[in-house]
Length: 349
Image (tube, rainbow, N blue to C red):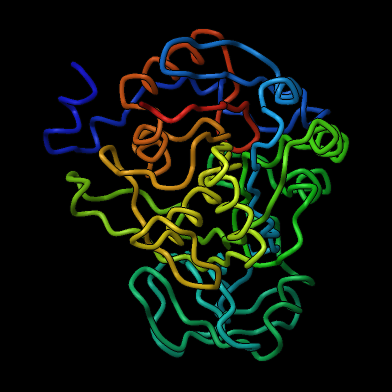
């Protein structure tokens, strides 16, 4: 079935499903960040490369836009006063002592329920917002996370977080704390590769989008039109908006490093397709048929079946092209998901 025919009919979750052998889900990072594989996908060909080849694949003058968010130790393990186990994943810190979090317990907690994390950090359930709970801590939330929190590894990574994860589930350029999941396309970059790209003449800029706990939430609606994205905070600095506009004016490609950078840039575009600087919330849900306004090329990892991220890359490169790319990657034994391999996608014509 042609991609346009898929776009013209109503899209469902089944359009974005695929079978993935469990052994292809990367459980640990490679010893060297930029040694991961890179599948270069154009509208016409697919080429197997390594990530360090990006130095040859990017053109001098192109603008690489990174998400400089920093992953916080957002996962808290604790107990109820009765002894029952509690797991909380902090979505965002609203006030010094107030956080929005996903909470997992044996029974759904009521307003007023108390949790204990570590030896003495206590929190009380103060309210609900959809799937999330408002937790009022007795001390500063960031201090609690630093003392008792764990690296919020995705559910498909089976091992408990360790010192290696604290280093490698973080980009080398991360500077703005607030994410509960890494912008994984950026995990492949090293300081050396960034330096070589700049010497080559590739320009760089940054946005910040704090990846929220909603990234782990499945799409529950069979019809994509019924799904509502969880809101995430992002910021586009004035210098980045200026750099993007200059690149577009000069006909130089804007290359988003990761789906989060892409969503920030596309969310910031106004009616005249200019990038507005500033901080906002975005719940932009990109599916096939979306008219991309800013981004020309996308560096991204391989995403979960039936996920909003798979829908986004399908919109960017074409549904059938992504299906072919994923089939190729599975056949060639690429590593999938956060610690896995990567793709360089060219926007569909």
